[in-house]
Image (cartoon, rainbow, N blue to C red; front, top):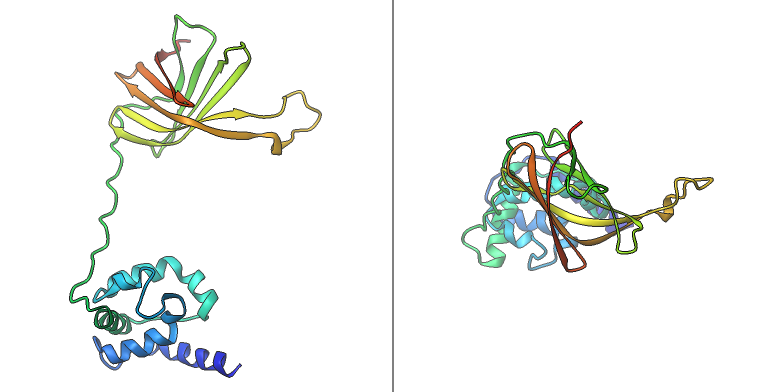
Length: 228
């Protein structure tokens, strides 16, 4: 209990402004009061990247507060305290400069059209793929077809990303589930199995190709919007 009370006392002092910024000695006290319980000494597990980089430490804390507070209790670091901790980590790790965080990923290209519709191959009536393009431009696709024994077969493309303005790609799943005629729907009988990837290349607003793999076997189909 005494040890835990000491932790709480140390935590309670963290909300007060630091007397001075970039003081490694003060940073050592703060680090050993809170951070050390998860990040050890010398700092590991990502903490070492915060050498002389208080902004990176703040970014990491903001994403992990609930998990961290579950271990050490409520806490708050001021900007000055973060600067002290960053200085101490730099001193311990011998890092004169900080490691910048990776740049954010580039946003997906924006497609030219909304491709939501039922698509098919007019020469191969009996199967098709339904595409729903959401406001985010992400696509959800459902393909209805048949297997080699002529039994109904479903595949889904539950999202992905635009590689280019006219090419969408994502993970391809096979779907099985209970009969629609079952007395009660059994959700535990619904299963998705990843079987490969799928890529849709749109040539214009009404024509495209669908390429997908199922357990290593690739299939390429030309598709168009189904007219009504």
